[in-house]
Image 1 (cartoon, helix red, strand yellow):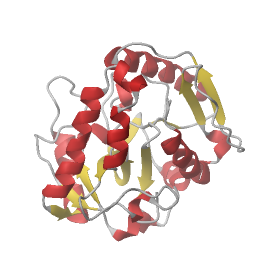
Image 2 (cartoon, one colour):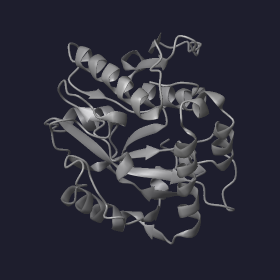
Image 3 (cartoon, one colour):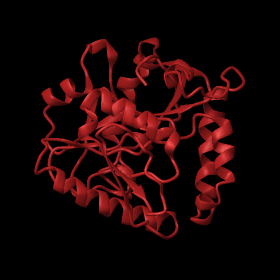
Image 4 (tube, helix red, strand yellow):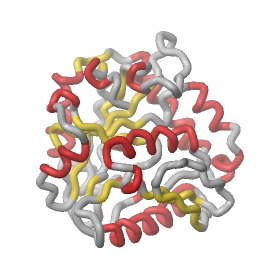
Length: 269
């Protein structure tokens, strides 16, 4: 589900459409005041009643709606993937398998998660993003983030928690070869532009947006670690430790690791 997010939605359709088939994509625009993007492909796009209210309340309404649509899709599909428009589930390129191939072979009991990577802009070395080029060709660093280690892939009708962060009533499993790249705050100029978006500010997003500048500050100042050495350890920590307020979500004990994204990912997204 997206609102005023055509920049990422265009990339989202191109990415998942090329890997899963556009006819298998379902996009809900949050509000009937939203214009249909006008894509020529067969992706299913529908504007629905807006989930009104402040951030937390509207997020709960959105995820209830999406969980209900997910349950309907299981009449036709074996697996359903839920992500935001700025999130991209990626199979490690060294396997040489497509997302469709990998998930078709995976044993998904209830849900599976990719390791969450919050991609940031390394200032001043990385400039504004060029939408015509692959994102990971222009951004080389990410924060390992439990916030984006989401229960994105499910194999049965379940109730997602807000933002796909968990599946209610079930544990999670972090796949060793899947990554969820989040690009929502990977460009300083785009973040500042969101401060002037009255639609978001009116819904209480200003604090949320301001917090996301931390990603840019962290990748710009913290030492970058070799990703392939630290990713397995991050999975282990996130699997072993849980926040006390939600035992079916991962925790990192406050550890902030910035990793340099391996070159093999440069052309993927």
